[in-house]
Amino acid sequence: MQGAIAEYVIQPHLQGAKTSLSCLFKQGRGWLVCANLQRFEFINQQYHLINIVVNHHPDLGLYQPLIDKIAQALPELWGYAGIDLIENDRLWVLEINPRLTTSFVGIYDALGINIAEAVLQLVHGDPILNPAYNRPITVQAQQETHAS
Image (cartoon, rainbow, N blue to C red; front, side, top):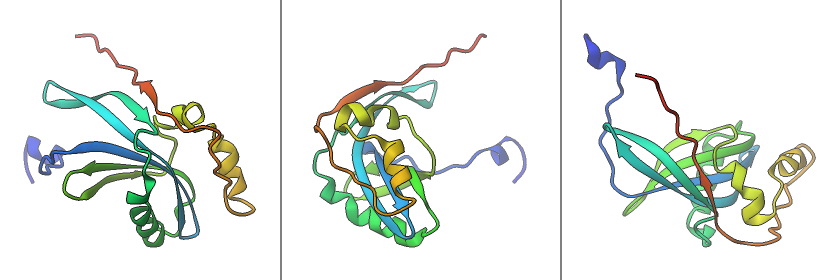
């Protein structure tokens, strides 16, 4: 490609709920910790994250088959990962982020699960993911301002 267009990846815009999944992975296995709702504003033709409702969706059964497929497809994926989805008539995987994500900061307040401890448990076995409580928590995204 030539010109300015070579600097961009162009893909179709998909309507639907913007969901993120907070997960743990180890040797082809995956554990879904919680499903989170991402809220965006469209400003100057760009999406800007406003907030995330951590533990938004209480029925995790919908997502576990997808997590199992990702774990099997990427058996080297280990530790905490965030998976971004668009949900409409199906689940569309946008990204797999093998790192701490914005949702991470609300997991303890939403579920009472210490994710750092759960990751360390992966070294010797399966993580213990027993929620002390089950509530949604909203995490505000920090908005960057740029000087003109």
